[in-house]
Image 1 (cartoon, rainbow, N blue to C red):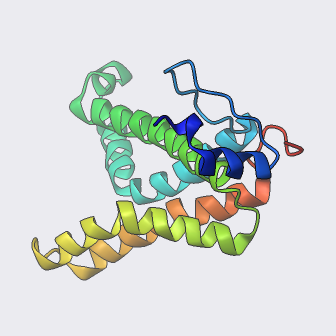
Image 2 (cartoon, one colour; image 1 turned 180 degrees about the vertical axis):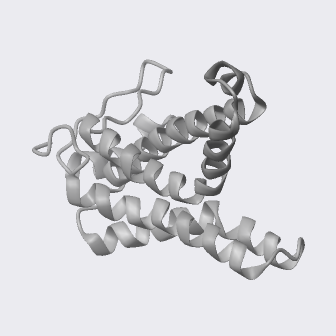
Length: 174
């Protein structure tokens, strides 16, 4: 029995006033998210990432001042690692902003309370296991893990609240 010949499924769709259209393409289109929301979310997240990576950049800046010439510094490993860290952080922030915006749109989240719950779910799914492992198995210092956990909470919960405030839908009337 196919899905469209199932009378219960057909009745449920018709009772909601929707027309049954079988999916003919196998390509899944990404959810539309307002470009300004992605841009501002990227700035929001990247700012948090930079605050956490400040020690890396501070050390890189100190070595740049010590270097004899700018060419010598540009060729150094410190400059390369700082550039890679900055670039991957920027790309990761943009992808995370898009992902959170798409989830806000897909779930129909409109309130700050809903955004807080959504951000907390994202946090629990992505970050909490890592921090538990760092504390319990790897025995890392609590203050180090706490700083990282706080930054991740701002990146997930804070970002979802921020994007809900800004708006993520490309056409809010749909």
